[in-house]
Length: 351
Image (cartoon, rainbow, N blue to C red; front, side, top):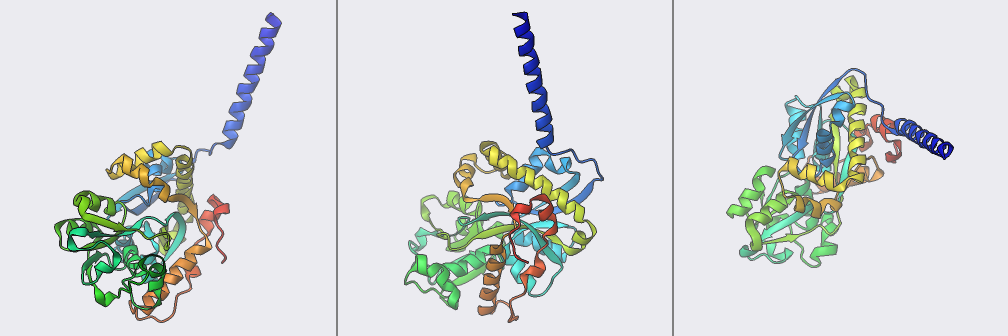
């Protein structure tokens, strides 16, 4: 009997030791190199959820980066601040501001995609202004942040000139051919869209979450939302200024390592991730949970990035939103090295 017990104890010890060795071989080694400082401009929304989780879990510190987060109402505002004012090394931003700036400058680069969604940008309207269907938008004031993703989506939705209207018209508007000249576009900072529609200063807005959620809360039954019906993939990227990229390439790698840890955590701990993000943004956890699956939160660099930005550039040229006549070569705005080291399988772009 004693011999059997001894054998059992030895077997358990062996299993435990093997398990510990295996776990250590799989776990990420603790970074012991020099600390890299990075200042990141982040839109305060659901899109950069990977950032909020990495911040909460201490992944930036684990990977040898001292990250200072500066919050902005929109990625466009963060991007503009980085380019024009300085003080930011990296920002989170969607494709539309990248497209507009690419016509005039090349001092930035996309280092990784962090999320994509076909169900984040909406047109929300006040029903007490007689709007119950898309055609009712004619003659109405529509609030939008020009140069933003909401502006581009408004074009796909139908309030645009030229052929790009078919992106949304063919699927949703059917026979409603709405032109820019049929509506009054009101250019507003993203942070003021909700209060303006709540106050009745505009009849509708084109924006993203959680702005739509906040507007719905303010208006209650007096609102109607027209979704994009998956005609437009909204991406959010990490974009770095070229000077920082050239001087601190290792910092970008370490930053993305932290984001990759956040990605893994989110995939395995959905409820905890929802709680972290809802608390960080100060919005209802049930709402965050209800829309969570609309966001594909992962590091990526795929060919669709090029295709989508090229489509937007053609839209801008056709609608004379730029005086340029040629679409830039967006491969010149892509930096692959860091993501190839952190998550090589995520890089499928052809360069």
